[in-house]
Length: 536
Image (tube, rainbow, N blue to C red; front, side, top):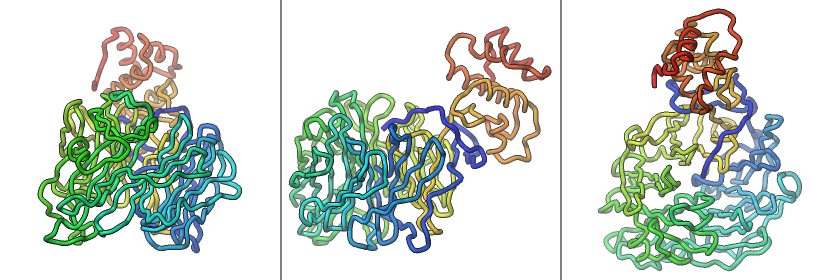
C-alpha cells in the first residue's frame, strides 16, 4: 500500500505535531468530527488493521466505516472540496449484538459502489453494497453469504483490474482449537458468491493442537516486483490452540510463530516470499516449510495470563527494496518486532524505540518509507523505519480523549491519512494528514510562500511558543527558534522538492525582500557560492 502527496489545504488552526519534526508534520482535520447521538454511541471492536476506509478519486471523497450501537456498521464521507463530514449512515447488516468480533470492513466495488463485510461471531457472514456508485445515500442491499458459515474476522480483497471480490474468514469448527481460513469469491460485484473453499487449513493435524489460524491483516499490492505476480495481497498469520494433550483442546490458549504468504488475485494462489507456489490452500506442512517467518520457540505465555508469545495483530508491506517486511507483536521480546526478507531468508529484529507489543495499530509504506502506527496513552505515535533498522519518531498526536483504534486509510488521500476512533467519550471519528517538512502553510508544497515565512521570522523569539506554533514560524529542528540551522534544513528540503540546478537561488532572488537580514545575507552568500549546507 503506497501513499502519495497532493496539493490540498489543511486547517492550520487544528495543527498537531511531534515535538521534534523528522520527515513530515501531522495536521489534525477537520474542525468538525463525525459524531453520533447519545442513543447510538460508537463501540470498541476488534477490527484488524485493514480496510477502515478508502479515498474515492471520482467523488473526491474519503469513505470510512466504524461501529455504532449494537455493533451496527456506520459509513461516513469526508468531502475534500467542501472540507466537511457528511452525516453517518447506518447499515444494519446483522442482528443487534454486543460482540466486539462483529466489526465491519469497507471497500470499493468494481462498479464504484461501496461494499461492507461483517460477520456474526462464529455464525453468519454478511455482505452489503450501496445503491449508487460513489455515494452512501439510498437503500443498501444486505445479504448473507452462504448459510451460517460459522464465520469470524472477514477480510476483503478486491481486484483493481477486474473488480472481483474475495473474502477470507475464519471458520469455527470442532475440536475448538481447529479453526481454518476459508475463502468465498464474487465476480459480479457481490450479487452472487461461490461456495466456501479452504485457504489456510491445517486439518487438525498438529500434535500441539495449534490448528487455529489468526490472520493479522491482508494488505493490497498493485504489483509484487520481486515475484512479478501482478496485483494481490500480503497476508500474515499466527497459529493458536490448546498446546497439546497435556492441556487438551482449548480455544486460543497458546499462540505461536509468525507466517507470511502473498495471495495472487490473478490465479487465486498463495506464494511464499521466495516465489514458491503454495496453491490455493496452505497446509501445515506448506506453512512450516515455506511460509514460516519467525519461530517463537517453546510455548510460554497464555491468553488467560494476558501475555501471549505472539499477538493477534501483524501486517506486511513491501520495503523500499521491493521485499516483504512484516511487523508483529512479540510477547517474548515485549516489543513490536520486524521481519525483513532479504531475497534468501527472513531476518527478525527488535528495533529500538517501539512500544510494547500491544501498542501495534497499523503499518504502511509511505513515500518510499515504512511507517508504523502505534498506540501511546490516549494518542498515537507515527514511527519511520530507518536504514539502520531503528525507528524514528515522525509525530505524536492526540486528537481525541480515548483514541483506542487507529488506522492508515487504504489508498489514502493526504487529507485522510490516519483514522482515529474514540468509542468511550461520546463518539468521534477523526483523521489526520501529513505535510512535508518545510511546508509552513499547509498547502503540501515547499515553495516561495514557505520561504517568506521562514525569512520574515528569522531570529524571532519563539521560546514561549508550543512546538506546533514555532514550526509554523520556521522552526524546523524543534529548538524553538528560527536560525541558521533552520535555514539549512529548509534549503535542503526545498532542493529535494525542486532538484533543478540553482532552483533555490532563483527562488530567493525572485522573492520580494523588504529589508536586509542575516538570513538574507546567508541566502545571498549561498547563492553566490553555491555550497552552503548548514545542518545537512
